Length: 178
Image (cartoon, rainbow, N blue to C red; front, top):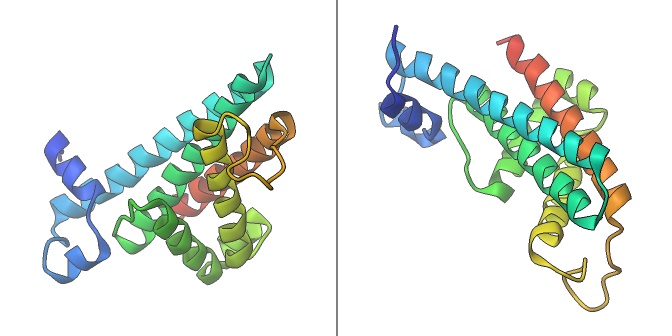
């Protein structure tokens, strides 16, 4: 079956409630949803590889900031792939996607084991990474308020890249079973 780009875009953005209103369930939609989460997972892998490359070859704080930012987006796309693949619905809002993914981790022992933490721990780790991504992209002083200590970018990048690799690999392994 050949899937059009329009159908893939549509299917990649189906929300959970859309299925209840009769928008999903056809073989074409199901095939497009499957292709959409696979494509989103490929994007997550590409962001993860970029984050790893930035961290490995970093010569300055900007390289480390880029590693943190790319690592965050690797996680973001992996968790959206997971939520789409498991629940047949997408969650584009960053905080809501993290919360949805934490619920999936809590419900799926396989993911909890692969990630080495509970759903709540995963949510906390991803929220911290999102904050660091905000610092990397938006704050020239490496903190977002006066009393916050400035972030040290080299260790932050190493931690972010490690988390991204764990999340991407765990989601890949999980979705391979579906």
